[in-house]
Each structure stands twice: as C-alpha cells, then as structure tokens.
Length: 114
Length: 114
Image 1 (tube, rainbow over the protein chains, first blue to last red):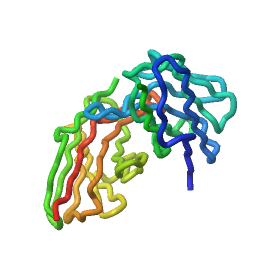
Image 2: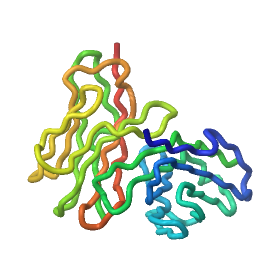
Image 3: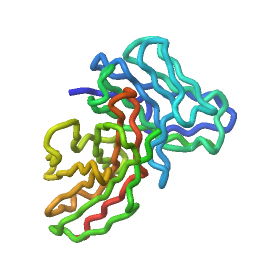
Image 4: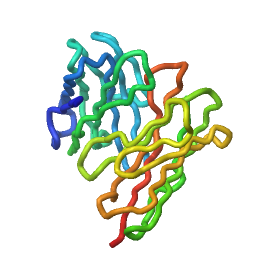
C-alpha cells in the first residue's frame, strides 16, 4: 500500500513564525502536491513538484514556498505565518506522466496560527 | 483551467435510503474523473475513477458513478447508505492532455440519519 505521511497532525504557531510542514511518501512517486482545504472552498493547490528540485506554482502559492531535495520528501514552508493561513494542509503523491493515476493523500496537518 | 461543480454542499439522507451526489465539470476536452471520500480528521481516499471504457464505474463500499460526456457530469450513487457513509465527498478532474494536475470540487457533506 502507498503510504503518505505528514510530520504533524495538529500544529499551533504564532503569527510571524517560520513553519515547516513535511511530507514523505514511500512508493517512489515522482509527483508530489500540497493543498490547503477550507470549508466551502474544497481543495486548492498550493504547489506541486514533478521531480527532485523541481516545483510549479499552483492556484494559491502566495505566502508559501516548497522544497524537494529528495524524491520521497516534499516540504511546505510558511516564511512568516499569518492568521489567514490557518487551515488544513494535505499532501499527496502520484506516479509521473500518467494523469490516470490517482493521487494518494496523507492524513493532513491542521495548522492554527494565533 | 477546469471548473468542477458539486451542486449540493450538504446532503442529509436516512439510513438505507438511496443517495446521489452530483458533479459537473467544465471542460470539453478529454478528462479523467475521480471521486474521493474524506472521513472526519482523515485524508482523502479514492472511491472510484473513470479512465475510459464503460461509463458506469463501480467503486468501493458499494458506490458507483456514471460518466455522461454530453452533460459533462459524473454523479455518484449508492442504492442504500449506512451510517458509516457519513463523510465529505469530493469530485476531481484531470485533463488527459495537460498532465498531472487535479481540479477538485468544493465537496459534498453527506450525513446519514439513523
């Protein structure tokens, strides 16, 4: 079974802090994705990566950056957390070059910025 | 970019009754279609997918969906729901030609009433 793990289930940070959300997948997937999920808005893509050290902006990249130094790990960084970044963050992975392959999701990190 | 519309944000239904969750997408190009389920405090889990072939697709937990190209719809159905089906359901689309990005609907919250 594909397993996507996220470093924390719940996280509380203060405004202005630098925040790292880590995601690891164990199925050698090339593609990895970060979404945020908000009530009534569904899932919105923040960034995705299709290879090590490669990244592409999604629909809402402002205020976020990402890092992919190893194939299995994709990090989301909030350089200076703000209250409007309080949300559920979901990581996903999928095989390369085949949009028919589904995305596999981690359990999510619920981030609260106070 | 794709637009995915889930027409009902909340659907209450009595146990053992049938249910249909509606999904429409905007594109006229060829697409792959997916339904995901999210149980409380968990990540998303694939219910079923349409890639090609028969327009009626069967998934896990007794769910099925029908692809209608002319109406650009992919509605999810179950003939008899259980309490355990209470969850959030997301429809997702990926365009065959453009690659790995998914477009998600805003979700439908299904509540099964005993």
